[in-house]
Image (cartoon, rainbow, N blue to C red; front, side, top):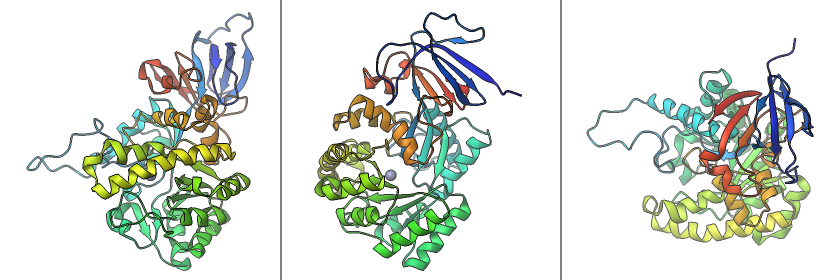
Amino acid sequence: MPGPSLVLWNIELASADHPVDGSRWVLHIEDGIIRSLRPVDGTDRPSGAIDFSGAVATPGLIDAHLHALSGEVVRNPGFGPPAELKGGEPRQRALGYFVLAAMAQALLSSGFTTVRDVGSDDLEGIALRQAVDLGVVPGPDVLSCGRILSATSPGGAVFTPMYRQADGPDEIRKAVREQVRDGADFIKIMATGARSVERENPEPAQLTREEIATVVEEAHRIGLRVAAHAEGLEGTRLAIEEGVDTIEHGLSLHRDPRLLELMAEKDITLVPTLSTFHDLAERFTESFPRVLVDQAKRQLEEAYESVAAASSAGVRIALGHDSGPPGDNAVEVLRLADAGLSNHAALGAATSAAANALGLEDRGHLAEGKRADIALFARNPLEDLGVLRSPEALLAVVKAGEIVHQA
Ligand SMILES: [Zn+2]
């Protein structure tokens, strides 16, 4: 028995695979899958088809680097509850789960149908995945790493509930297995320290080559991918040479073109997260120690240089916002274009390239047989990427064949 069907009538297609030529299409969806895509070419509207004349469809957007954090207020001004005041009513810990639900709704109703949680407190990313998958709250599909694996480090003192510190191959192998036990969809490691920790130098490698190799071996053996937080060159090198699947941030890559060649050769994706460097260098300078703000200013320039170098070297680039508020994730698409990506490549970073980086071959394209995750806009984002972050331009969002948001 065929499942529920949906027919979208008279739409333009915008994706990394489609030229901007004004052609109009009719799209048949069944059981959550795009069954056919045909040019309209003077045919009549099939009965039951929804008339989207003038609308432009993109694949559902994908964010490959966000943090599903119920308590994150610094990067989400204007989102979630106002900051707590001294003497006010103490807030319940569980309040945070409502914030997570609001975050999921904001992501979905801005066109994001899949997100990858690269670290959250107390397995909140996994709780959110369950809530969405079980139909408790509307939201994008969530892939979560569980806890981030790091060496015993100053970052561990700052981000304790988000980190699982482990030292030596045996301990880190156990840490991988713990994440698998707790429901992780992939593994995230700290190949270097973090720019947001005052006592941590992000330049040297943090985990040893042996530790990284162990994580990759353990994760790949059971079919999970590995994402590496990588700032300084040495840790980035170890992660690439040992075969992780995605390099997060990767701002030092412009310093070593050979590493970019190796990434292209080994099919490793770069997730540049330009927005997060803008945050520390420009947006939230009052919230961080001066030394970190100055460091971020240098890193911001390097991050843009690395995107340009990676793009010329043929490295796949995927979108990661790593910032806030939820719902404004597409600002990263514009920043990738500022760094030199064509509009097609920048939209591809938020769709097909991100799907590929996450190992989700079933989505990211507007093509027969792919999952019907679709965002419908009033104007063509390939002509003006700003459309992607204009709430008034988003007409509807389809996730797995169902309309989940409509203007
Ligand atoms: Zn991050």
